[in-house]
Length: 296
Image 1 (cartoon, rainbow, N blue to C red):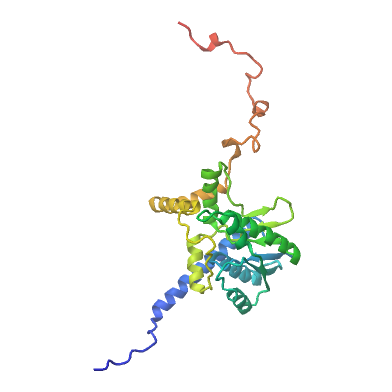
Image 2: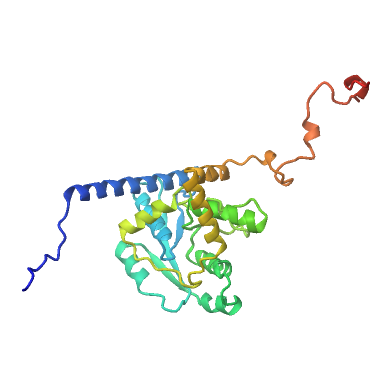
């Protein structure tokens, strides 16, 4: 006996649809507000800037570009956006995805072709972490391209969680109290890097990217390397937040609220010169220990 044909379309629940739209609007406003605050706090964007937006094909850079384009329409200053993707010649990389997307949203873009994949694979032994070398090669190429197109700012898609993870990576494995600054002048002083997503949570970005249906391109250069140091840090922080909600917020607040005199870096604080600042009526006098210590 033949079953009656089912409708191909799933009935739409108006209440659920309205709730979903409301939640998305709240999410978008929250991300936009956080990006706007980071831009204001660090003076990331100024009138006349030409910003090269580095687009990897991941959720973070897609979100960054989307929000910057939105802010561009209402910002009190005029600035130019140019999306740039670096095709590293990874096997199976879908070359057509990003150009099609960027053309559909009407943003100027460039695809920079550079075979860093082969370089990384030749230098890094099989099974070892490739991220560090890959990042350096990519950064050098993008810096050079920014000069070529006349961009005075380079926007990177690192978010709040990236900054916190980098702090612990440097502490545990580098012996440095160092993270990712929201704004940075390169060592050669030729490039200003900005991270507009610095105040944004990764979980918000994930939800936003899913709702917007960005054509995500996964990075398969390093495979799934679950034992990467960053993955371990990410898991540690996730467990901390589970045990004590809000801990990540406090850690990030600490990154932005540093007290050099309470640490130990002699390059940041003049510990040797403290005596010169010391005040008190006893200065310059030698104390007689018999005056302050009772001897039996």
